[in-house]
Length: 98
Image (cartoon, rainbow, N blue to C red):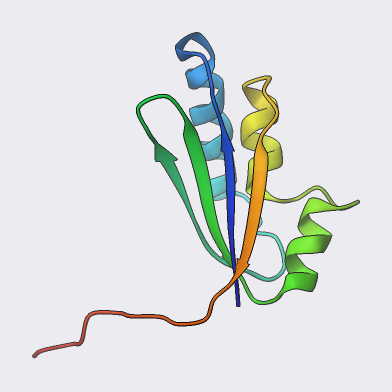
């Protein structure tokens, strides 16, 4: 699996465009290979964190298909984002202690 981070600084005046685009993504069709995705707001930047089945799915979403969530969200805010991709080497999830 692949962990991807897209990050950009978005002026406060444009953040409502970003949130509107994210809302549209939540109810729309999801890109093939996307496992899950999160929209994060930091002190001076926004991030879209996503997990993908494999590098090929992420490459398609970033490439000619342009269906990566970051494309719609950051384009709506009128900003370019920086992408980082990493292979997931380990995973820790809480144990179900019922």
